[in-house]
Image (tube, rainbow over all chains, first blue to last red; front, side, top):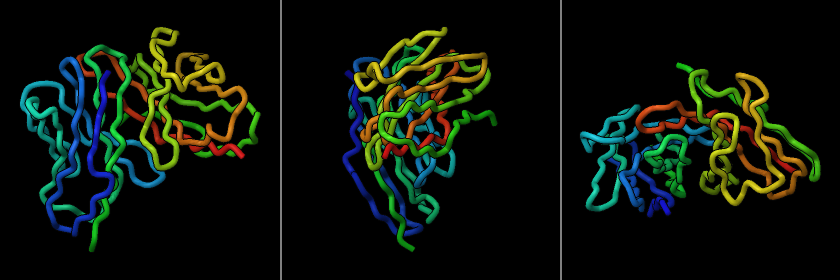
Length: 114
Length: 114
C-alpha cells in the first residue's frame, strides 16, 4: 500500500533563510507526487506536482521540489522564505490510474521568525 | 481559474442529526472525492465517485455516510446520524481525465458536532 512520511512535524526558520521540507513515499509503481499548502482554517492549495520528465519541478510562490527515485523522496525547497509562507505543508502521492485516491503525509508545520 | 466550491463553510449540528455537505466540482471534471481532516491531523481519504457510482472508499466511509450527484453540477456528502467524532473539516475535490490526476480541492466545510 502506498504511504507518505514527512519526518519533520514542525520547522521554524527565519525570514530570508532557505527551507527544505522532507517527504518520503512508499509506492509500488511510478508515483505521482504533489505538495499542497494549507493556511490556518483554509483549504488545500496545490504548490507543485511531479508526473514524469525533469525531476526538478517548479511551483508557485517560488517553491521547487526534486524527485529522487533512488531515495523515494520528493523534498520541497525554497531559497528564501517569506513570513507569508508560514502554513502547514502536505506531501501527497497519487496513483497512475485515473480517479485513484491520494494518500497524504501527516504534514509539516512551518513557522517563520521575523 | 475554475475552482471547487463548497457549502456551508461552517456548520454546527447536534449529535444524531443528519448533515448534508454540498460541493460544486470544476465543470469539466469527471472524478469527485471527499476527504476529511480532523483538527490537527492529516487529510484522510473518504470516497471517490465516478460515472454516478462510488469507485473507491476508505474504512472511514461506513454506512453512516453516503454520496450523491443529484444533478449535473452538485456533489453531496450526507452523514445520517452525526457523532462527536465526525467533527472535522471536510474537503470536496475533483479531477479530470488525463495523465496524472491532479486533484483540486475546495476550501472545505467545517463540521462541528455538539
